[in-house]
Length: 394
Image (tube, rainbow, N blue to C red; front, side, top):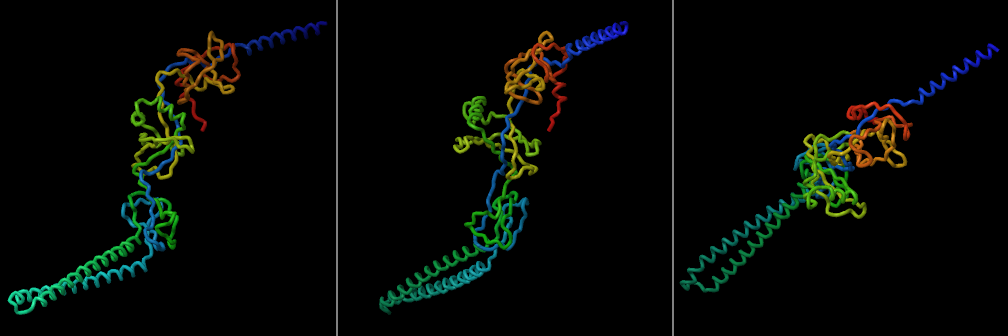
């Protein structure tokens, strides 16, 4: 009997101890709490963009022939007029030499015709006083004048032939000159799809290469109709050009996630919606002094959006269920799940437009497992310190 009483006593003490431990576990726990505050923040709208040089010239052959030399390499910077390719000119050179000989022959004909005119003029001048003195008949003078007129006509014909010969020579010589393909502008050489031995000509669909002037570049991005009309509504200015001028400088995020050091300005917007894509295109100009950007680069345009005096809480204070965003508001140390409207997320802050007011206290983080009416022990913390301590995972 004594043993049984002893066992019952021990069991009672253990049960009481477990109940106390259970009560201790179920009691309020400390949670970090922050106050909603107002801040001025700058967010960014992001748009995929493609980069092009301000001038991109296709280089094509002006004559048909086989490439004998490629004088540059891909990615090389060239100056206007610099030789890029040589095309074989054997037949063209022979034609030019023949045309040059034709010019010499035509010049000889002109010289002979001029001599004939001079001789005919001398004959006329000699006969005039003789006719005036009735020493010879007027018929002889008329014959001499006719010979002079004929000599002058032949001179004109010889000069015309000479001009035609010179034109032919210049044309054939120009074709010989075209055998050296030169850079139309200063810039960077693009891809070289054709090599030595390739047959090229002025009607080829494939260009010999492309020269890109990348001292400045254009980044092109597009907005859909909804985004475009929102842009028109929010941007200050009466007209589209005025709205464009009032836009802040934009940034270019490169393909590796880094920011291009130069800021750009939106310069223009196309005048109509592309019916095939439902978008309208914007053009941004960037200086490119270090030639870091090349024709064909891709990136993301970051268009600044300023938020003035907006209510913010740490992103970690929000959670989402079925597409609806909530935060746990703290009132008298008890929790109330509150629907909040988040307009933007900037630097680990959530910009809240409804659901919370300045000064409202919310659980700052570790909201998993909490529910309405849970009682907590608030531990106030600084919101700035919290968001700055959060590092991106990727």
